[in-house]
Length: 151
Image 1 (tube, helix red, strand yellow):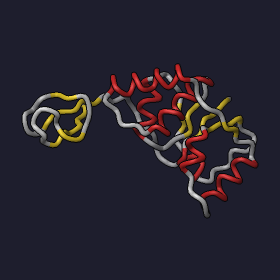
Image 2: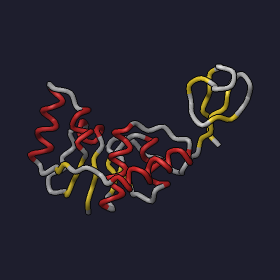
Image 3: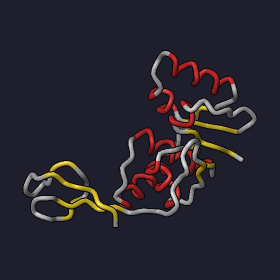
Image 4: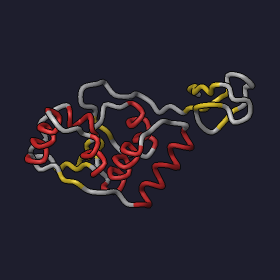
């Protein structure tokens, strides 16, 4: 079985020796120098492989994020895209990533948390004028705060 580890999976310090495990270059950049980099060194010694995802998989993940109204960083996008490319199981505790993985038919395995039970979709709505908008922040129509809510 092939696994793709996000930053939390690497920082958890869980033993991955004997697993076929991958991560992305952006995850490596996210891990700071110091004690955390030592954990990364152990993971690399335990056969953690570094690979970039395809542009097509990145586009697929971004479209799903927009469709679901989910939140994800660029690092999350790359990790999910790599799991999609490799047909791998995602190692992550992040509920947003697990939600997206489920919606993309990517299996996931939590590290320390229970994991999600069902897929959730979200929408964004202005707290001032009540209009539905594409993303959070300020309303492009009236400037009021936009809030995310679960459908």
